[in-house]
Structures are given as C-alpha cells and as structure tokens.
Amino acid sequence: MIQRVEVGRDLSHGAIGDLGATLSEQIGRGVTSLHLNTARVLSFDSQALESLVEFNELARARGLSFVIVDPSEPFAVALSITGLESRFEIRRGEPEAAPAKTGAG
Image (cartoon, rainbow, N blue to C red; front, side, top):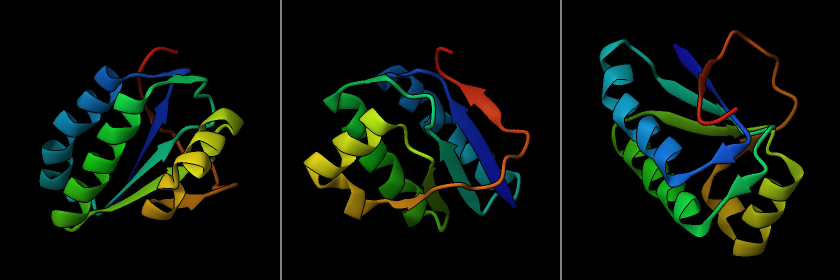
C-alpha cells in the first residue's frame, strides 16, 4: 500500500519530525511505500534536509520505499547543489491521489 503525504510550503525540521513519528504507525497499517509530495515547498533549511536523509535511511531499514514526488524548483535545486538527489528516489508528474497533509500550508 502506498501512503501519499503532501507537504506545505514550509518543510521545517518539525514537519520532518511528524513524518518520523508517523513511520511506525504506517508500518503497522501495511504501508509499503511513502510518497512525499514536495511541489509546494518554498522554505526549508539544512536541518530539514538532514532529517529527510535520516528518515529515508530509517524507512529503507524498515523495508519501506521512500519517494520524493514533484520537488518544487527551490527544493530540487537544493537537492542538486548538496548532492542529495542521488540519495533519494525522486519522481516527477506522479498522478494525484487524496494525500494526507503535513506542515504549514
């Protein structure tokens, strides 16, 4: 089962923390893949990027697929400049589903 999560404009460390807290819950519900839609993200910092890397590693260690979907231009540029894009599965143009929302919006 795929769980889609849509992030608001602010991808703060706190929003990433909320995702981490949700991880165990999702495993218990039979989720096999987490898709994080970042199309609206305009504000983030290095701590949020580091938390995403940790979240990705934790998800994969628990057997989950973690995908960043439709990164906004500023977010995509940051992933490219930092070299982090190679650490994530990134998809563009994924069909929309009724996503859960997290973060400021």
